[in-house]
Length: 275
Image (cartoon, rainbow, N blue to C red; front, side):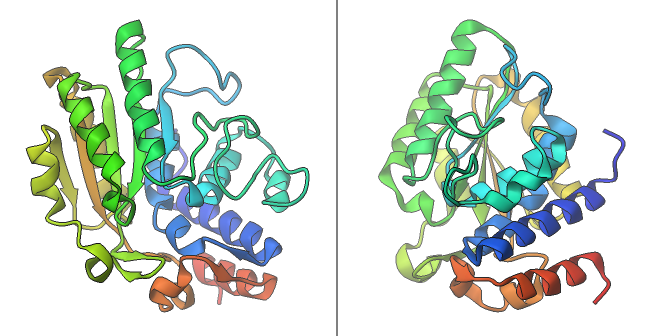
């Protein structure tokens, strides 16, 4: 698409903080950290059609860190899957946009997620099905660094390599923080590049996972590795709360935090550079 990707990121961030501010609370830190990745995937990389969200052979995304659902919703709305006005119903009675991703309710969501680790296994299953169907799709998955402490992640990783799922590209949102504090203090998962390589995956590390240009370069490289027959893990070094300084300063406290409409207005002004 011709739209400037940085402007897309700003639009998504503004809509994201606005809907969470309207609700008054949300997983804002881990949502903001993956906006740049979502913008690159949905606006530059994925074979999708908002007018035909179930088309055969489409690329699919599984956000295994399901609490980042609002970031996916804001991206889908900006991409044209549904009207932006729906964002203001986030996690309210009768909404199509629950706090965590639900494929039964939300147009454009390919897999229900929330129980950490399970979404990644579903992505691996989707990649295997796509390979058997030979439909040409690429399956994308996003996991968290705290989520990487789940044993199910590594069972799925081993299976994906064993089944030669070169059509699977996964991303680790490595922002270094989880609900209980720094990931390194809760249960150090590193060195992640060595671990994923040992499990038979290609590994690409991105120094600034909140830079859309660096993210795009990594995705393009991952796509070029498809024919090797092995999956690729892209480790994105990101900042939890990226784009809103007063959210980022809260550290692990921004995992799930109170966030008022006044906070949202302040955040939008910062994102737009009008404060």
